[in-house]
Length: 67
Length: 143
Image (tube, rainbow over all chains, first blue to last red; front, side):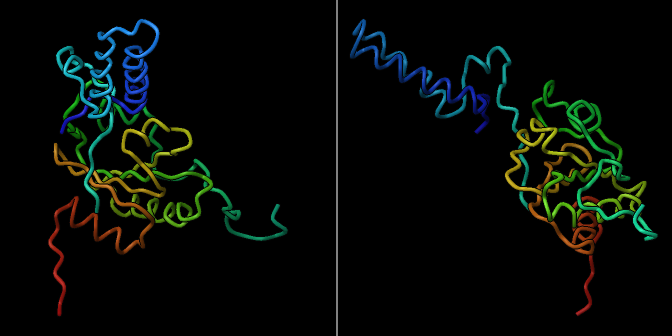
């Protein structure tokens, strides 16, 4: 599958997403905090549809075959 | 300087003054592939290329480096040889997911996917890979 989220951005998305989800249980305790699942998922699969739409790709890895 | 010793000085470390062209990120983008502008791999060079990813402190790289220099002379006009110092060009190493050095990148002409081989190899084996994978020569072995 094509990826467009680089490794640094991936880590930021997952950490930030988990923090947002945690806000459902402390602080504002709002159910909106479950929206944090979006950055977590896009980070896990390294693909962001919004990046695709606006032509951003932070994952510059070039695919090679092993010989 | 070396107590009357003739010949070149001992090569404890690889120096930059080898015959093979060293690539930086800028020259890679210009000569091989601009991954900042393009997404789909396409090599625009006129000759297939081999890139040696190395570092000055790496033992097997010291074995491979003179072989690359020799082949670069012998195969002039057939294949372009380049070297990338992974200590200085960390982004290039990261773009290709280099995990160990030396690693050799074989780049066929056009949009065919590049091939990566990890570790050093003897000159004969390396030439065979270049002939088969880049020059698409048929190797006939007599039984």
